Length: 265
Ligand SMILES: Nc1ncnc2c1ncn2[C@@H]1O[C@H](COP(=O)(O)OP(=O)(O)O)[C@@H](O)[C@H]1O
Ligand SMILES: [Mg+2]
Image (cartoon, rainbow, N blue to C red; front, side):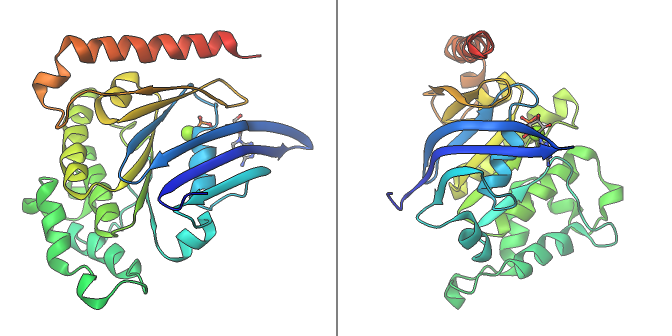
């Protein structure tokens, strides 16, 4: 398999629940380019989180293969090459934002990286600044709004310097206006660092706004139903987001999702 891509081949995952087996994913085939921003989009229960956990090496697939730039998820995770942005930010409550972000930088310092390539505390400050958190670097998480805490979780993931960033509905607890603002911040930071992002959402607008490509999944058992390229220009300025081309893509993604429902067994 080519080592400059993320490859998923014939993946399936069966869970055992109270003696019954639950097929969560079946026949999943797809691949992602380095630096691509891809969204897994589909209804609740279709296996999005499961797929992300398999990619992170937190769970083992039942059949099939995953390669992250030539490595297995376990290897990539041991080399600290995977960053995870969860649904709730999970910051240390007693530590300032800066301390939270720097701790992640220290814990994830990669042994295979030359010392001069290692990130410094300035990098933590730079990422906090890029996410509009510079005035809150000394604040504790409890002193911040939900949107700020989630931005801090994104900052923490970016200072890790991992090649692959996995984001599982990171904005689902935020109100709609806050979500929009945080999405734009995420795009700005991503455009600067260009890491590979696999982002999970069940919001079509979020998928189209952020992604280079939307991978539409079917209801359980989850399969890749179709992939929709989002060839809208970047940066995704307000002009782009208000354009008829954006609305057309949104309609297309919703239409494909519905077709996937009808296709389900
Ligand atoms: N640890 C587990 N044990 C048993 N069943 C699970 C487990 N994790 C997920 N599932 C089941 O797998 C299916 C997919 O779940 P999940 O990946 O969380 O979906 P999504 O993130 O798309 O909402 C669901 O039916 C869920 O109940
Ligand atoms: Mg989920």
